Length: 403
Ligand SMILES: Cc1ncc(COP(=O)(O)O)c(C=O)c1O
Image (cartoon, rainbow, N blue to C red; front, side, top):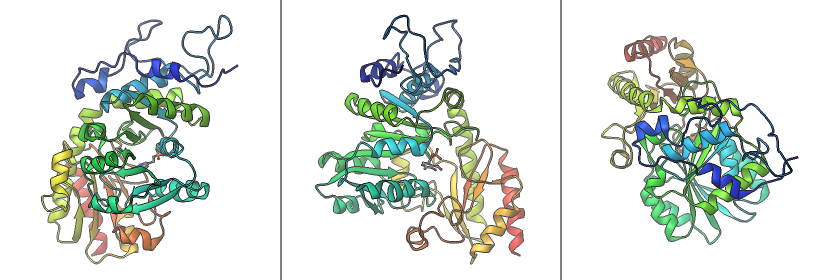
């Protein structure tokens, strides 16, 4: 039988051999990892088991039941902690399951201040799941951190930042938000899905919690749904590990393996994503049929200075609006793409295109999404690592459907 949560066990296993001194491009491969204890396997075996044999009740080799702990998942958790320069990693069944665990740190009556322009599923989780339990959410344009200060009340317990924002690519100054959070003793969590730790490391900038949809760049191959949290504070790690085990939305062994395998090439993939992202963004900006392009690498992007300061690259997520286009024009363009796949999600090696108004952001009411710029004609690209000329030619031919 499972013996229930034992925070001491979690902390011991999560904190093992972090290899803190390595640089980022080595941490992706070695961070928090050691050869498997049984046979020295270089990649952690997929411990596809629900439970572990005990010699005598409570006498086991460190694992008793795979919801509370599994060696493959722990290998991923150590890798997550390492690449985010944290101390404790926790792997979940999805990005939303990881977010769900963070909000469960709160109690009815508590308030959360969240980025207004965020992933539609995150908005839905806050509004439709947690608001009925008495947690209140304020959605604020965080490009001016002063607006956060204005929304703080004695009940504010969590600030939720997504940067760059999805899909408008606004950049929020994590250091400035962290100063406000610290002054008011409020937890700061950052969704680092778009940037990845290759580009931005929120714990270094003062965040308490980093969250990932590992489904995206960390996994990198569009073959897994997973999520992660990384923290430095032991007490916070213990609370989250308790919720992870007690609520049970853990990352399975096979999925943990896939994300771990993805992380090993994160730095090389991200380098190419950033190069291709720049090429595609410049192409769109120079195209006479395109009215607006949102990408933080442009010098005239409203938050470019913050991006330059806190990011080591501008990423490969780009949104744009074709000249005078309607909802149906945007749909015709995404339907015409041949190298870009029309699909939800992002961050895989293959380029994807999406229409936020009908796809990722359909769960946000129209007037709410339009306030933050998510208009009917907005198209979002996740630029992959194909040869960039093929991507540009594909966009060119798709734009011709509006002629
Ligand atoms: C920025 C962001 N955060 C969170 C999520 C949710 O992650 P998952 O789909 O793994 O639950 C997504 C998914 O698209 C996302 O884009």
